[in-house]
Amino acid sequence: MPLKKTAPDFILILATFLLLSIGLIMVYSASAVAANYHFSDSFFFAKRQLLFAGVGIIAMFVIMYVDYWVIKKWVKPILIICFILLIAVLIPGVGMTRNGSTSWIGVGAFSIQPSEFMKLAMIAFLAKFLSENQRYITTVKKGLLPSLSLVFIAFGLIMLQPDLGTGTVMVGTCILMIFTAGARILHFAVLGLVGVAGFVGLVISAPYRIARITSFLDPWQDPLGSGFQIIQSLYAIGPGGLFGLGLGESRQKFFYLPEPQTDFIFAVIAEELGFIGGSVILLLFALLLWRGIRVALGAPDLFGSFLAVGIISMIAIQVMINIGVVIGLMPVTGITLPFLSYGGSSLTLMLMAVGILLNISRYSKL
Image 1: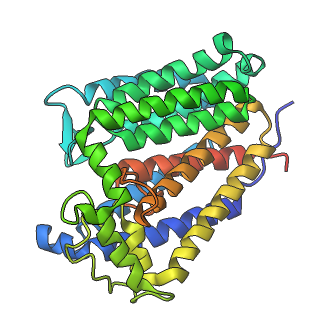
Image 2 (image 1 turned 30 degrees about the vertical axis):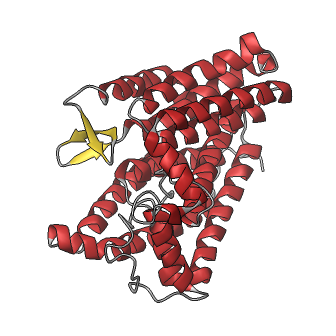
């Protein structure tokens, strides 16, 4: 008997569009000065972000009305395409390098970041695997290792770019999915020790990562170098106070805070809109995640549940890491703030992910 379809989760749609609208306004506010200086067009970044938002919204609504079980059938081809793109980005002349990381492939005047789409592809793969093999998840040979093997291969390719931030989000999301599926705590403890050792090794192997750690602990040790971004971010947040300096009145966007429209957009939000504005952003994310959890609990099958868990885990991890970096609680990672930071691949991916959540919500039992 086919499942009865209902209307998609309205509150989830509302939270997404409110975050997206605030993001478009703040991308313009944060980038106008730099855009006018470099491109003689203060709307340069805002127009591109609006275009990506349009593409993402169309993708979101298409995905919302195409039954999510179709994703299960196409997991293998999607994953293969993402792996091909991850390999292609490492080929000289194909991949584009920005800020020391070769993570983009140019398409005309625009570029895509394959590692962003790998996150969603890996969530879909793991949701399919866990839904079909949950009874084995307490074992290492048939459950834990097969579920993590492709995850770590993808992580290795992402680290060759290198992009520790995106790789960390992907691995963290997959681990939360496996934990939700019922994996044993002892296995996670051992895996955690191995992960910590590997993370330390990755940090030690790259001097710039060590610099990020030391600057996180004491940014004033190198105020004009590795500690510059964190210091300028805190300089933005501090003067914001309760109500902020006012929309468009940021001082740090005048070439003090590097690329304020991307990873550090929350610092500009806190400076212009204050504690109240920052709190509204956090409440909207909390609302979105609550509705996402509700979708996962009400999904009609295990595949839908694990798919929803993966998506909300990915969003939650990115929000925590990004804001943690901005307020000085974590080292700089290069992670964008979902729906708010400038970036075509990230924004499109997030709207597609919400489209999947909305699709699952149409079959919710709650």
